[in-house]
Length: 102
Image (cartoon, rainbow, N blue to C red; front, side):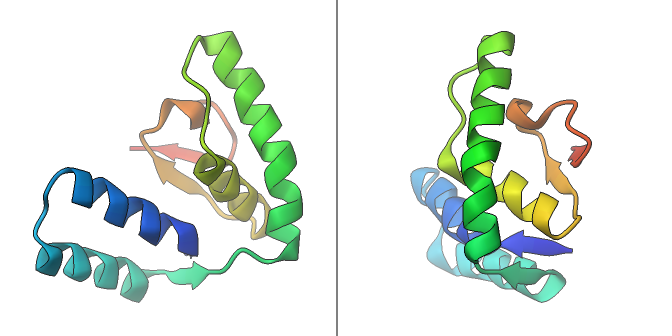
C-alpha cells in the first residue's frame, strides 16, 4: 500500500482542528508510516495531478459537490502512477475505478 506524503500532513491538520492530543496524532501517523510506503510527490505524480484535479473538478460540478482540493488530485494521481487504490470515504472519489469506499 502507498500513501502520498502529503496525506500525513492532511491527517495532522485534521487532527489539529479536532484538538487531538499531539502524542495520539504522532502515534497514528507512525502507524500509517509503518503500514504503507510513504511516497513523495515526484515528477510523474506532479504532472498527472493537474489532469486529475480537472477531472475531479468536473465530477464535483456534476454531483454538485464543493470543489476538490489539490490534496485530492495528488492522491488520485499517486494511485494512478503506482497502480494503487484510494481508500476513502470522500465523495469526490465515488465511482472512480481506483477507489475503495470506506
